[in-house]
Figure 1 (tube, helix red, strand yellow):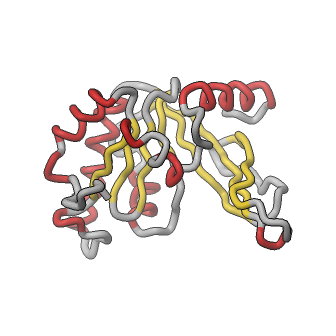
Figure 2: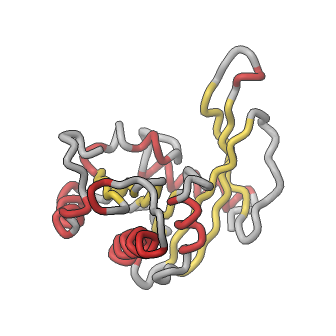
Length: 191
């Protein structure tokens, strides 16, 4: 997808135009874009991890339901990070191209620096098409994945326990939130 420098630069420019206050790191988006954010929990009563196949079915159905509402019949970018202590880019991931690298933790001692190397793949969204990845995320085997439309107007950041979703407007966020009110946290901050 973004293997050549021109395509990578275009993707970076698009991200920076749409989300200028934050790099493409899921856990960092909530603070500057709180008015566009909603968090959904993956299981009833905010249970974090599935214990059997019936619970995995709930987790995947919740992820896919929201993804369908965000991206139905559209192409998406699936952005996958590789965290490292080295600035050199690791080998490409199958089916995706290198996009960019971020220095996430800048420490004077090179041994304590943290880099986030991002890989992106463009694919048509289909219900269930990312189930293997989403299940790995639910089991905390994979972290930091972002799923966004090709205009980067909406971002879905699944994590083990739920998903943070960032929408184009507060009104759009409210409609999505209200449509899945039983999936919300009872925590006053929405966490």
